[in-house]
Length: 320
Ligand code: HMG
Ligand code: MG
Image (cartoon, rainbow, N blue to C red; front, side, top):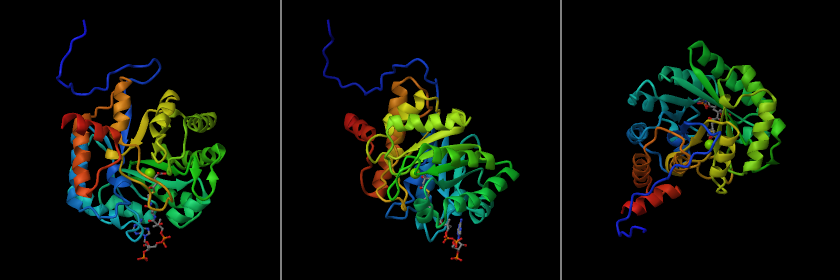
């Protein structure tokens, strides 16, 4: 006999693990950096610090805090040094900052950075628009960051942007990305995040790219994936990457974010949407979904508009 009740239960996700998938993965939160770098309003430093603290309190264990880039290019993150001075996050939290060149490295080290991220482009046009240089020029700007970080005992993550397609050049070949990834590994980066900057990847393309990287001897543990959700494919792409052995996934609380220099780009995959799927697969993230969604709702009030995350919206509706 089925029980009838008018009491609405707190929604799950109900865990249904699949064989072959990992028991736990790393969710890499980019909300404070990718999420805020293209906002029309400049968020005050104290609010950014509060955002980072709330994310960590919700169980986030890897967070990209800010960028030490030119304040003329990205005024929204011009307070990078002040933010690091204000933040006192626990030492076991990965706290990563972007630095495109030696000047960025020097500023980041002076501010007490503990992990660096460099960023290069798979396409010449985006290297020009995002960094004012060429593909090779971006690699050469990244080199002193990687070397300088290593000299201080710090790890460097490398982003490759436009891994799947570029708004000006169209489809990007998997061999082009694999060549660049090999050069970054030779340079000494500790990991590579594959950026779908404009959200055009689809699951078959994700498998093809990962196969091309694995064929060069690059291990899944060295890779992360960074999907923007422009065409609603990000979760399907994460699932493809999961089945291929990837265990680090970039996302932004509430679905914030985009690169201001990438035409047509929209928000990152929302961390809540990612965590809902992962928990549904029985994969541990350490993240408290309700606390994270509450953080994103708070950030929506700061920014004055609702974010795109379906899970944040559904959880709010189910508890109101
Ligand atoms: P530039 O103007 O071509 O180069 O900028 P420059 O070397 O001639 O420098 C010009 C001025 O900037 C000089 O100052 C430098 O000192 C200063 P001035 O003499 O005019 O007073 N400068 C700096 N100041 C502070 N920090 C620095 C720095 N470097 C130079 N690090 C530059 C070249 C790389 C600086 C510029 O193009 C830049 O900052 N670009 C960053 C753009 C950016 O942040 N984009 C978003 C992040 S990437 C992204 O979102 C994609 C990702 O999410 C993955 C994905 O989705 O694919 C990671
Ligand atoms: Mg991005």
